Image (cartoon, rainbow, N blue to C red):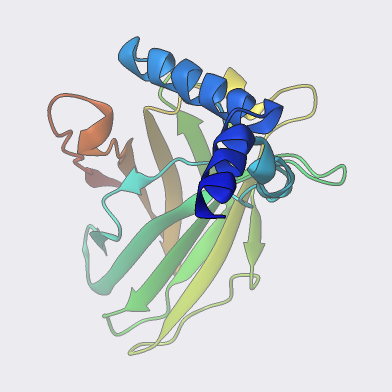
Length: 216
């Protein structure tokens, strides 16, 4: 009885299903030896298709420093002092007719004795190839910040109509803006560099941010 069962098992092992699985295993082994990517098993095809449709909201791009700190003063105005903290939140993908856009956070703290205000019209963002992004949207709309207070702004720079995010050199970003201390304006420019993880290149990339201001 046991011999008949063993013979039946051997016949099942030689069946078409077993032969196909064996052939697939050999093919996968050959691909691995050649350094080629492994083909997904057919049983996981529906799951992989579902995951492919669930793309991240943001492009896989990061910028450093995060955050970047800048001290801002107005020449000749010792009471005019502010601190700015900035981070690039990410690059949101184009979706539902909305263009791709760079999303940033900016916190302005008034360290002086007089009001300070972000000039929304002065905001400009450039890529590493000096191509400019579209006009920014700032939320909340800037208002005078009293001494000892701070405000966090969400800033979006859309890709202009007719262009794609791939048209830009994203190795770095340059942001320029003005803070107004009464009638005086302090212009500040900062640089963000793209962060490249160590596993993408043989050596680690280090990001450095720079900030400086010009005064009327």
